[in-house]
Amino acid sequence: MILLTANRNMEGKHSLEQTIREENTPTSLPVLTISQEVRLREREFRTRCAERLLEIVLDIEYYLGLGRIFIP
Image (cartoon, rainbow, N blue to C red; front, side, top):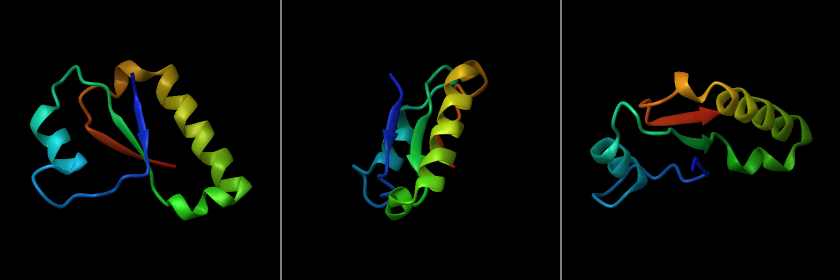
């Protein structure tokens, strides 16, 4: 499973970022984070996010172990 989120929280010992740092391994799937959630209202931005998401999923083996990837 690939986690797609808009959670950018990097504060605290229970934050998503802290979990990624502690649990990530070279074979872990990346966490995909929408870079600007408020822009999801814009059609062009949603299209760019979808295209980037598709690129990542089709070549997932190149993204293993990266931790977090911001899209687009």
